[in-house]
Amino acid sequence: MIFIGAGVPVAFGVPSLVEMTKIVKESLPTSSPEANQFDMVSNELASQGFSTDIENVLSALEALMDPGRIREEIGPKVAALSGGKPLDVICNISELTSRIKQKIKELCTDADFEKAKQFYQMLFEACGASVRKQGGIPGIDLFQTTFVTTNYDVTIEESFDILGIGYSDGFVWDDIRKQLVFAAAWGAGRHLLKMHGSVDYHQNEQGLVVKDRAKEKIGRPRKMQDILVYPAGEKSITTYPYYELYYRFYEELKNQSRVLTLGFSFRDYAIRNLFVDWLRRRRDARLINYSRSARKQHQLFPSDVSDRVISRDKNFVTEDWRPGFTSDLIG
Image 1 (cartoon, rainbow, N blue to C red):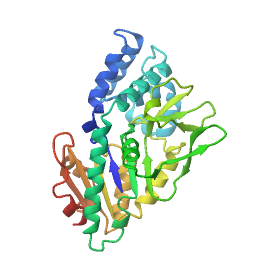
Image 2 (tube, rainbow, N blue to C red):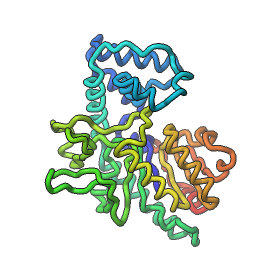
Image 3 (cartoon, rainbow, N blue to C red):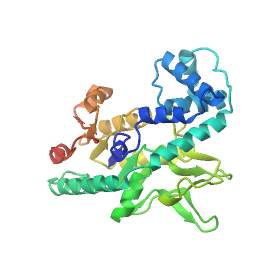
Image 4 (cartoon, one colour):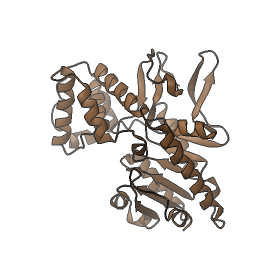
């Protein structure tokens, strides 16, 4: 299994969360109710010690739309986290979140797809060479069968298409609706799981999750209710389609002896906990973590599994991540 985090597409021109937050904020009219609401949420996040990145801002805004639901999800724990009464709502939150998601979509689709293709081509070559030297490690033959990402951009799909790499992502063609509809259907061959949704996933008027994958079509007007991206604080993994994605992720994870994470921050507690559970259940399992802050992230893992987490600081924008890759994978 190969897990792609936000640190990878930065190398292809997709803004980091910090840059994306700044760009989104600057896209709102100065001193407008929307801009003031954005600032209000950012200031409250900062006052309570949270990062003010766009995922957290979006999460807080969506909570303001339905604070009762958030209270029910979190339960009594909300009492320990409450900073007082809910923030004032001074604009149409639904319109603001839609506007933010549309801007995220624009930023995520303005990537250097040639660089992305070259990266994934090198990744496949490095993985293939490593697997050939694996020396009979159980389960390593499954290493390249599953790609997982929490990213919203479409650089993985575009790169796979250009390279002629077949994959399934849970969507099937609906002849009646003439659309790709999510059906939690993964066929033979490589699987792609986009755990937090994607800028080309939408929820239509019937509540179905559909997608528009063609790069040239992204950004055209569509009669869709929402772009389906999953902000950092929204942990409703019991809702469609996230339940199906998380369930599939763990079912496939259990069969792996090696998982490579590239540019992933482990900020998603649900995913991190699944990795810890996997390491505890499989004593032969190894997690190879390449990211800009991998050594710092190492402390997030409990001591009983941390010795099987290989952490290498790698900056995908400025350096070659491949030296030592084979020995890390099969060691």
